[in-house]
Length: 241
Image (cartoon, rainbow, N blue to C red; front, side, top):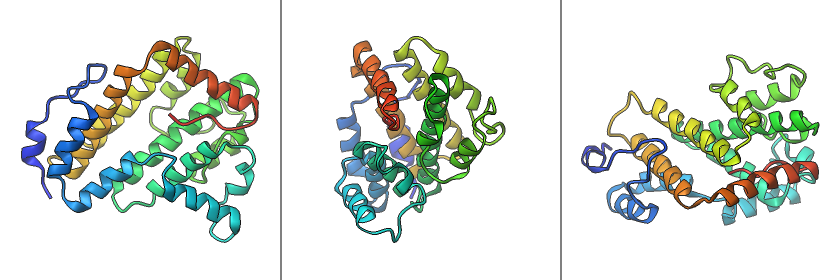
């Protein structure tokens, strides 16, 4: 289904600028416009780690080894329940029928895995306990710990930029640059498609980022990052943002 009229009428988004619409206003508009099938795709992108579906999935994995992902037993006692549900959300999203949606979840998992591994290596934490999932990037990170680039050169986009973020002293700036990478990824993945549901979903995600920075204070940003380091010192994974 094409969304020519919808997309033509939406205000322009620009990385680093103010959000042109509140999340509530955009959600109301999309609810009135999207098809039933496309609304389900948007619902998946809006899903949070406390979703009941993910809670039930975690309980099922705890009750039986049948169907457990390969990484579950390795990290079950290391990660907080919130982080476990976040990883399950990634796995759930990567099974979606829409390639754009699958790739978005995979990109974010890879982004967080590389960032976690780089932070762990810098501070002397066990990198293998911070990497979750069993895709190509996760396997390479575990296999090539001593290599400067983890052996990911040519495998993951924006690898140098992600690894360099660890050296950024301004914590708010670091988080904004992460979102800038996500913003750019969305633009790249929708550059050659027009008026499709993928364009609508990318618009929602980008507008959501801009709204997030409008309400996140410097103190909150620093607290988010410091909680990451504290969790890793305890032997758990960084919290996904």
